[in-house]
Image 1: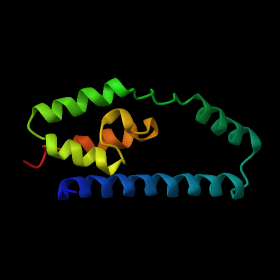
Image 2: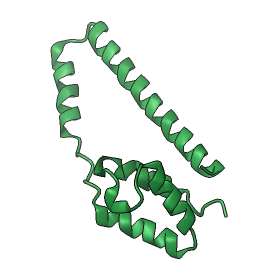
Image 3: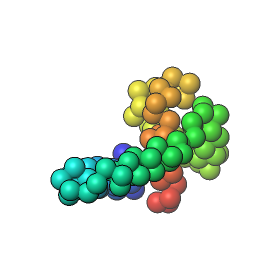
Length: 111
């Protein structure tokens, strides 16, 4: 894995950890601050109204990886697919598409 890919993965892990810590702090505050139930209900309603992320499709990932490959990064694309346990894109688990796209973003950015 290239230095840029490692750095991007580390940054993403830090962001995930920070979000988890923030969620835990919010939960602790809500349950132990003595706020009334109406404020807690408002927070729950606001959380439910958040829009879900759009589903990433095979075609979306294929377009990004094809562009990287055309730009001369075919070997890096193959290595990335192997990271997700596949020899070709159609063998990658759709649950990994988002992570795969994030990893693909850094391909070619360091050259």
